[in-house]
Image 1 (cartoon, rainbow, N blue to C red):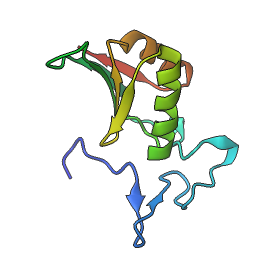
Image 2: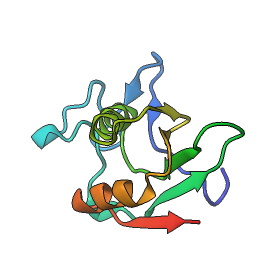
Image 3: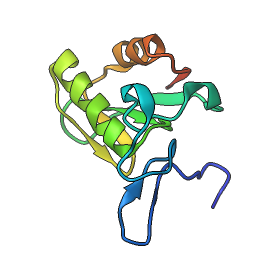
Image 4: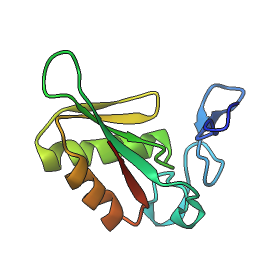
Length: 119
């Protein structure tokens, strides 16, 4: 693994994804954390950037989010409803249509994350 690569989740011998917080499948984290890592252990900020695509209005990317993949899907669903736009999760990165950096940054900071805008 390189310097920027880190384990976000792992799968057991049966191929099921285990939670990085509690280590169990399915996640049994208290308080409805949905597999979210404890924020006090967040060592690097979440990166929010914008990438222009060949067509359309581009994508807002949310990278290095210390969260279980199921939690990322739930968070993306909330962003899509809140912002009225489309999006997907690809290789652990949230991709949201349009330039929504400021709104996403505000939402993540309100949830307690350290956020860094890129570009």
